[in-house]
Length: 261
Picture (cartoon, rainbow, N blue to C red):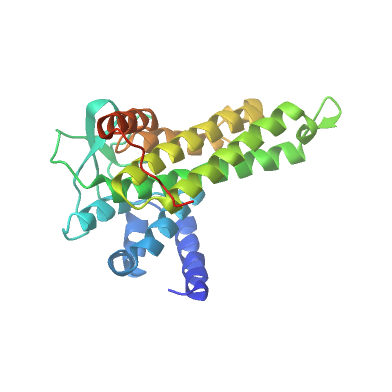
């Protein structure tokens, strides 16, 4: 897929995610060739699809497909997914009535512990999803502070808010760099941890920038905050993955390079 084809696919996917979500989006992605893209060009398809899911706020059961494909199994099914705190969940196909208490829109349900899965592709996919959501939260906060005044001055002129949004931007850019560099299991684990921490930083700082309006149902920020809280827990939270990486480093007695400098 060359640059022109990628831009065209991005436009088509963005429109699909703006118009549909859930089971309808699953069907739309299948019609657009998602299973073929996942098989033939995963390094292009996964970042593109999951980043757009984060940016648009849509959801689909494509994480199942990524993990099934990594295990050499046919896509289109489901499998138990480890969750933070030792729990296991299933991302069901279709618009099931159950959902996460934090994000009722997501069709997640608790299930018994399942067999170990190949985590690295899922870590990278969720990392891109978290990154996309973090970018949208930052964009919402930026638009707010540029358009509002307080105490007779633009909100954007207050240094405290500028520092918070700058810190968010740096965290998101750093997470993207780690995601791009991640190729093995350790790098993918660290990429998901970095993206989770960056998205949670975005949620915290952007909520502060928006003030009271950010807590209301009228403003979309709360939807992204809910989403990143759930996605951070899937396949291990950023805190758990950071601790796991520390245990791995102590056991190996060496520090692997993410990139060649």
